[in-house]
Length: 264
Image (cartoon, rainbow, N blue to C red; front, side, top):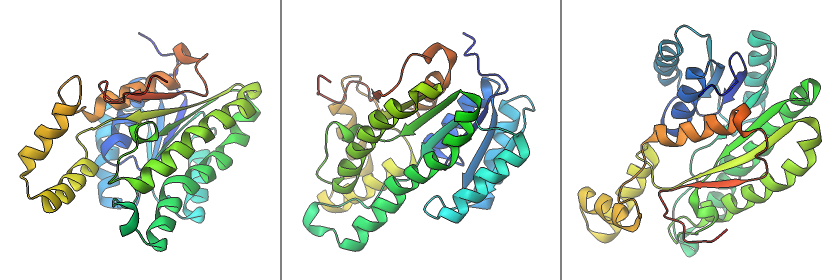
């Protein structure tokens, strides 16, 4: 199926690995010109080479940036505009905030979570929306988490802020919809990424279990009885960026193998 986004310019935050890279791969395979950022220049170089190959030579821009810093985000956006002349698609992928039960969390950890999970998304949207408004076309896609709908005790900060991002998705969609911009969120369940292995380490230390036991327990809770491959999330991101999804906006879409039990 042709998604109708060939030569569109897509910015993917934290695009050097995990769900960010999977999203960038899905977009470049649809013919997008992709701009990724990450803190590690080494990881960016590897990802850039992989994306260029997957896109059959379609240009890929890689910019070293810390998404918690406004100046870095401004630099990334400017570099993308200078290289490609426009911005059509924004994927606001961010890292997970500190994981711990409520009483174990400090003010500093809450602030870190806000800066790395919520405020940076606000800033990225603010920076690209004027460009999308000029061309009367845009796609904003947030990669958040299923905990926005089904909170987890170990993910107190994430559960709180991801729910807020779903509210932002809905409110922003109503405000920029008249400009031809759609805003949606993807709520992944358990996917095989570095974040999942980090959570496994916490649970292994906390419960005295093996890594194999942890992953078996996680899979047993999922109706499809397996964790997602990162690319399965990335493909949904590409769909939401497509012309086929032009009438989908304000939606927080669970991509979790049936894990969330909420009706809506």
